Length: 112
Length: 109
Image (cartoon, rainbow over all chains, first blue to last red):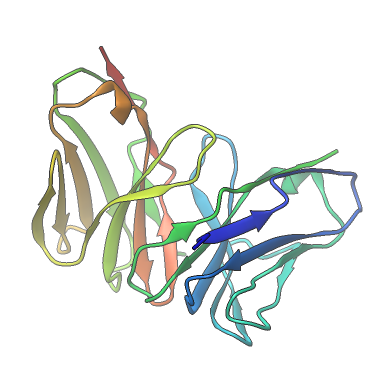
């Protein structure tokens, strides 16, 4: 049981490039979330999903896209990377919408 | 806009003392409340969850919830150097979880 797995752990992008952050969970959780955390700050919700085929915007969705084709996977796509997207990205999942969030180890992204 | 606010600190307490962390939230419809601990460079981990008004104790940790005042707190008794971390307050509203900016705690040996 690996929990929530994020890849890559580190990535450097040039301005204008695109990339996908991968997130997979093996706990059969319906609810999945993407957050970003800037230095010294809390977590800001980017997108979330309540089940396969269903996604919705969070607090800071601009510049990102998601998909949820399976229960296990919830990739986050960055289009036209900008320096403002330099951050640590966390994927999380839970079995109930009032339950504990299980976090991945994070993906540290730098846009230069 | 759902807001969760915490006293940002930093908070320093001597070893063995009580650390008190506070959090307020703006949405009266919020249903569940959580405290996460985050060590530097690591992902958040759950310490406490609380769903109804009052106190909830788990070992050295006590969470307090007052929905009328929209206030959540965390007390850490007998603070240890290993408690030094950032503590994040999280609030669940509907299908979303909102986080405060965190309070940095340092326990001085």
